Image 1 (cartoon, rainbow, N blue to C red):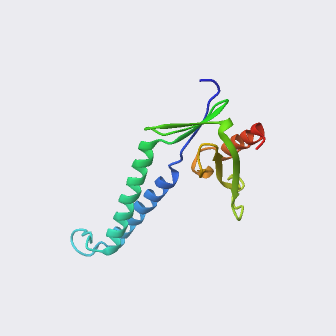
Image 2 (cartoon, rainbow, N blue to C red):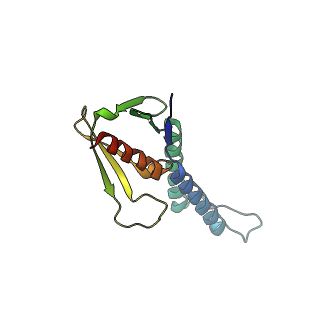
Image 3 (spheres, rainbow, N blue to C red):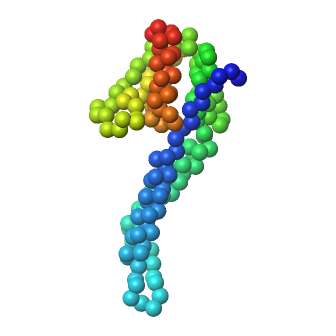
Length: 155
C-alpha cells in the first residue's frame, strides 16, 4: 500500500491511572498497617482499600479492552481507514461532505492541538463521525491530515 500514514490510539491515560492508583494503594496500606506488633499486619477491612481496588480493576479492564481493540486511523491517498482488530471501515475523500472542528476553551500546552474533536459529515450517514484528535498519537499531524482533506475537497 502506497504512502500510508498510521495514527494509533493512545493508552497513556490508562497507564497513568493504574500507576497512580497502585501507588496510592501501596502507600495507604503502608500507613494503615500495624507497625507496632511483632509482624506487619495489613488492614483489608477498609472501605478505601475496596474502592481503590475497584478503580484499579476498572482501569485494568479498560486498558485490556482498548489494547485488544487496537484502534488506528490510516490515511491513504484517496481514503481514510478506521481500523481496529475486529473490523475496518473505509471512507473515501469524495464521500466527505463537510469537516467541522471544535476548539478548546483555553490553550494550556503549546505542544497539544487547540482543536479537540473533528467531525466528518459523510454522504452515506445522517450523523457526524466524531474523532477525538487527542486520543491518537501525533495529534498535530493528524489534524493536519484532516486539514489537507479539507483543502483537497474544497469543503
